[in-house]
Image (cartoon, rainbow, N blue to C red; front, side, top):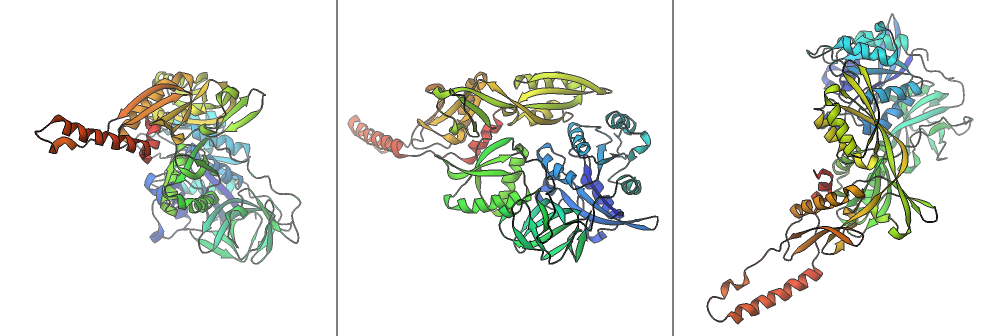
Length: 595
C-alpha cells in the first residue's frame, strides 16, 4: 500500500488538464505510441468536438522512481462549473490533487472553487503552472497569485507545459514524494466507495470503486449497503486505457466490479460495497446529495417513445449522477419528464447525448428554477414548473433561490459587469483587488435571472476574460408572476414562465415577436398573446396564407365573387375552430435567446 498514490487533476475550464494527463500517460508508458491521440481520456465524441471534459476519467499508471515501483491512480476531472459534481466525487476517491493554473490566464473563479473543495477533503495540493511555453505566458505573475492563494513556498510550484512535456518528471516526483499513501487496513472487513458507474449493453452495470479497507477477490459474495442488494463479483480489475481483470484488489486501490446488475436503480454513486459474510460496521460517508439548479421538461416527439425515454434517462443517470428526473404531463406535449440539471451546458449536453447514444428525439421546454410558494395558511410547496403554480388568490408570497456569485476579471471590465449584474436584479456585496489589476466581485443574484443567458453575456462583455462561479445561498421573497402565452386563445403550458413583475411586459412583448417569426403560417389567422392572469399585455398576429379563389371569376356579376368568398369564409371559420397550431422545437429554444 505504501507505493500507491491516488490523485486527481483540478483546474478551471481550458487550463490544459487533459493535455497534461496525456503527457503523464506518455511519460509512464501507460499508452503505446500507436494508441496515443490528443486528450486520450476524453473518449466521448461530444467531448472531442467541444474540446471540454464532461466525465471524470480514472486510469492507472506504473512508474519507477529510485528503483521502487509505484502505482499511480489518476482521475482527470472536468473544469466547467456545470460539472462540479463530477469533481467532488473524484476528490472523494483521492489523497492528493494537482492544481493546474494557465500561465497566460492566471487564477480564475473555478480554480478557486475546486481548490476549496479539495482543501475541505484534506487533500495534499501540488500547484502546477501549465502552458509556460506560450509567448503570452506570465509565470512570475501567476506564481505570485498562487502564493497569495495557497500560502505555499515558491519552490513548491512546478512549471510545466502539456504541449512540450516540460516539467512532467518533476510532477511525477512531487506526486510520489508529497502525496500521502492511502490509509486503510487490508485485513479489516471490506469497505469500498462507489464513485462512478457506467452502463455496458453486454455486461450490465459496471461500478468504479475505491477500497478504503479490506480486500476483494474475484467471485466474492458482496452487498451494496444503501440498496441492500447482494451479488457475486463476476469480475474485478483495474482501469488502464481498457479494463484489466485482476484476481484480487486490496485497500487503497481504485478498480471496477462487474456483477451482472441489470437495473440502474440498484447502483447508487456514493454507496458502500462490503462482504455479505463479514460486513463492515458502518457505510462510508458518501458525498452530499446533488441539488439540481435548473429544471426543464423533456418530452419525446413520438408519444409511444415514452418508455424508451425513461430507460435512456436511467442509463444516462448511471453515467451522470447529477441528473434527476420525474414523470410529468403537459397539455401541449403529452407525457414526459421534468429533469433537473446543474446548469444550461449540462442540459445541452444531456439533450445531445440522448440523441447520439440512445437515438431519442426530444423536445425540451424553457428551463426554470424551483420556487417556494407559501399559501395563506403558511404552508410551503416547492414548484418546479409554472403550470404547477396554485391559484393566484391562494398565494401569500413566493420565494426564489438566490446565489452568491464570484466573478474574477481584470479592472477594465468592472463597469460593464456591474451594469450587467444590476440589470439582473443583483446586489454587489464586495469587491477585492486580488493581485495586479485583477478584481474579484461578489454578487447576490436571483438564480432565475442567470439561468438563461447570463454566462454568454458575461463572456462577451468581458471579451472572455471574466470567470464565473456560484453556489446557492438562500431563498428570498420576490414579486413573481406567471406569464402565459396564448395561441388562438389556448394557453401553451410549455411556454409559460415565472418572471419578475418589472420584466414581465417587455419579456411578453419580445416573446410574441419571436414566436411570430418562428411559427409557420396556416390557412387561418393565428393570434399570439402574452397574458398575466386575465390581462393581455402583448399581441401579434400571424396572417393567413391566402388563395385567390376569385381568380377564375372574370366578368359577370359581383354576386358570383361574393358567393365564392362567403363559401371560403365559412371554411376558414370551421378550420379555425378545429385547426391546431404546431409549435416547432425552435420556438421553445428561442425563448432562451431572446435578445
